[in-house]
Structures are given as structure tokens and as C-alpha cells.
Length: 287
Image 1 (cartoon, rainbow, N blue to C red):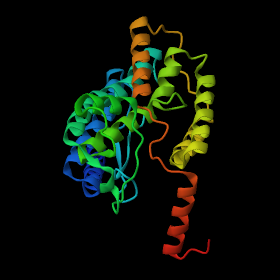
Image 2: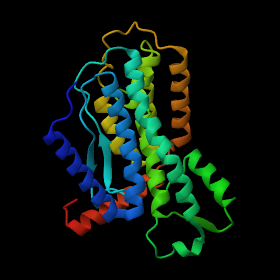
Image 3: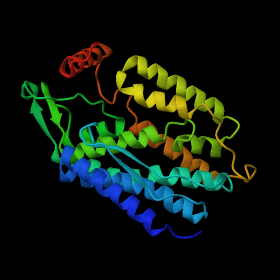
Image 4: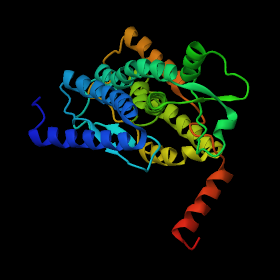
């Protein structure tokens, strides 16, 4: 498989630099370094695994989003431009990204939590704080490094801790076993006959999460679009996967469980509607 063209390398590099600048403007240098390290490891895991199996794949494309998101980015992705030869290749390409990103996310999480500090709840008054849901791995890191939460206080997250929080969120979202997500690839590689049913259950759960929190709305709409089609077969679906990969797959889904939170941003539909009304008044919209 030929190496990427010079123009492809430059395009990917410019998007990475723009995304780094976007995250830097949003949250600072340490957040940009921490978060982009996690995202880069994730996407390069996919890319290198694809090259190992001689599957034509693009370099990572990073998506800058200054002032539009909490993190200054919408993440990154690669494009697979050729069929997958067999289920082992599909599994390895699918699992390499989340595992590589998670291995980088762990030290970022530990260092970020160590740098954060407990503040009295009164310190939130007059400050624009969002209440973030904490996945199990984040809670365990806080308990281990900072101890139990003191009464009447909250953990003031530094930029590096927020980078780790977002990295865990990205890992969990990608491991949802739906359609063309990494979790969908793993489910198809491990149990192709059950992949369609598992994907449909995952979509139903996401729809229920929208009812719970408006923060799931955009992601669920995207999954509904992606999940309409069955997962494409590999060229040799009959090739055995082997028990070591099955165990690794269950480890990946354990990471998903530890990184997932049903309430990424804790806000109600009433608060969401109120924010929309305030925005419409600010922009002088008729509704």
C-alpha cells in the first residue's frame, strides 16, 4: 500500500494544527496538549492497524470547533477506503483506537485529578460552572488521589483534568456498539449474527438517554443516521477470531463501562429550553 501523498499529509497536519489552536483558545495549553495527545493516539491506533493489514485508510482528520463546544473540537476520524479482509483485521482496526487512546488518557487523568482541588460550594456563586457527570474511572481516580469529597465542596477541575474527562467521553462514545462506531466493529467481529440486534438495542438506549438529558440529542440523531444500515461484511467472515481477541474485546467493553456516563452534562430539558429562549432573545429571533 503506497504512503500518503504530500497533499494528504499537509491537509491532515493543517487540520491538526487548527484543532490544537482551537482547543488552546478554548481551554489553555495543558488542555490542548492533553486532549490532542489522547485523540492522536486513538486515531493513529486505527491508522497503523489498518496499514498493518494493508487496508487503504486516510490519515486522521481533526475537527476544530472554536467556541462551539466545551473542548474546542468535535474529535477526529479516519476513513477506511477499502474492504476489510477478515474479522480479525476488523477487530484489530476497531480495538486499536480506543485502547491506544485509553492508554494515553490514564496518565492524563491521574495527573489532571492530582492538579485539581476541592473548593467550597460557595465558590460556585457568580461563576459559570457546568455540572459534569463523572464516569466510574474518573470517580475512582478522584477517590484514590483526592480522597472522599468533603461536605459542602466540589472538585474544581483544571484544564488537564477536563482533557481527561473529555478523553473518557470520546472513548465511551466510540465504543457504543452501534453501526460503524468502534464498538459496532467489535460487536460484528466477535458475534456477526448478533451485531444488528445489539446495534438496535444501543439505538433504543440512546433514545431513552435523550429523554433523560438534552446533551444526548445531537449524538443520538447522528447514531440514528449511521445505524440505518447493517454493518458491511468482511471479505472472509468465516475466518475464526480466536479466544485472545475475544478476551481483549471484553476488556474493551469493560473500558466502555468505566468511561461511560449517562449524564455527560447535567442539565434538564427545562434549562435547555430556557437557554434557547435566552439565545433567541439575544439574536432577536422571532421564536
